[in-house]
Length: 287
Image (cartoon, rainbow, N blue to C red; front, top):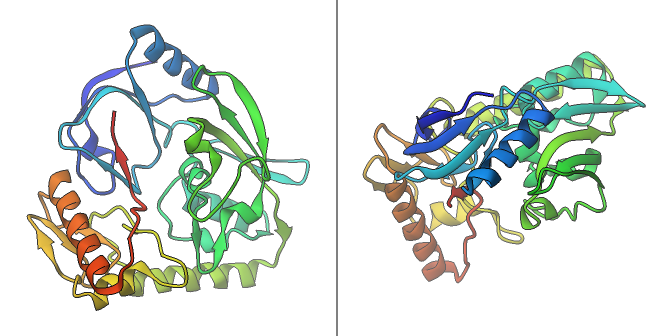
């Protein structure tokens, strides 16, 4: 497997932000993924897993270890035992289209979410009142030593935008989805409706990392930021979207420092006005 040196992370993140990764690789299968983990252990360097590069902020200084990118690598999808299986690097829009083709309903709410299966499982991705946890049968993972085991939906400890995977430093290899038979016409209509709503409400086409903050109980982060006067605020080339206040967009040359300063400012104004602590939803790529 090829290991690239000093690979610019801004080329691999939807924010288009991030310095160089000391080492970078894209395993094509589980064996190569385990090999990459072993390589990092032998070299005694840290490693991190990257999916599609959405929902993540890479730092300006980059990453001094090995970045293992699963998107475009682990991309197998197949149907077995009435379950739809997808490897961690499968893009969610592709998964939705495969389910549609197989007339398997349940995942339409993922339409337009630009991440991968692995990242979606880790954070229990959700939209429009639904979460991925409701459709997971089991997940194949590797531990930090590259050893494989399987976790059932219950064992994954799903919650709002979380699972036990991150806490236990596990790596998603493949997820098995339990879906029901559906009608192509109604499924396609749902997908088109979700895509239309995203286009209407979200800053598509401008580099961003998706929702910046988690929604507090019975509140929405975007409305809190907007009502606190945060919409449109700017730090360098990082700006709170004029279209949706829970998105920060990169207007051109935004740095991770710009984004972090802006996030801190938003947390302060929301805390001051509403006594609510906004918790970040996007993940920092730290060593």
